[in-house]
Image (tube, rainbow, N blue to C red):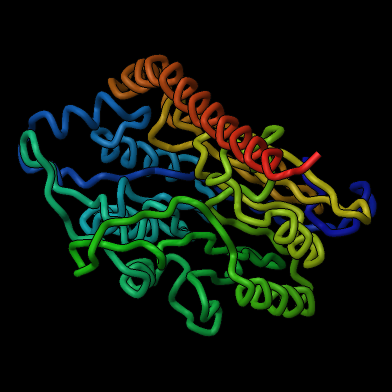
Length: 370
């Protein structure tokens, strides 16, 4: 249970609420539109072979999510980034069409982009054994596509990023924080000399100022504040900021301090495809939770049910489907096959970094006269 009201220490001290608030949180659906597979061949076979997630089954998984949302009836669905496989326009359009179905059924959805979603040079068509560039989206196009899912009101948006503030329930504000670096990507398809892609995260200084301003306004209106962003806010294991630094936002302790000072007590994240929750404290003993949710298209297809009542937030972990769907068993096999490969890759990266540090140390010592 998360103390949702800043400063409260037990339920008796917390604000009382007559109505329970019920949300659903998912992350990293990595939707891949079927139209991008122009013809089957080695290129599309490699997707099924090399990914732990299931991009080729993402349409079926997305339909299963719709069924689950309509059954669970949350008032709001939050999607914490990496909406698409690699930022393909067709994949964004497919997801928006799905969210339109939920909107028509009375479900409010709020999204934030992930590192895969905008100006991605790896947006491809799959043509037999080869790939070719497919249209991706820029930031303006992203905001237009998701106008009904967080980006409709310019007054609620940060002018320096794709961050915005929303009011998904009485007495609550949601800070959707853009932690991406896609503005630094380059694309040959857009006339750049080379392709480059940034998966690491950071929050701009101007956006930190905007967060402070929005928090002051929200608190003056008596609202509690929760946040959502793609990259981790906190380390989910010792040394994450060193070993997997692209998965945690740069200068994370500064952002953590800003959010705690703004009385934010929980942030929903994704990116690393793990389902976990951690807590950290500032120097005054105030704390914040980072509630990370794994990829929707990766076994075991996790989602979160969030209930807020009487000043407490309860986080319940569910899974999208039980047995019976063919993609469930395929997803299990993908993870069983992929985890050893991923572990080896991480170990090699860590070892290479250690070798570089040893070489730097040797160089420095060589310059010292004893």
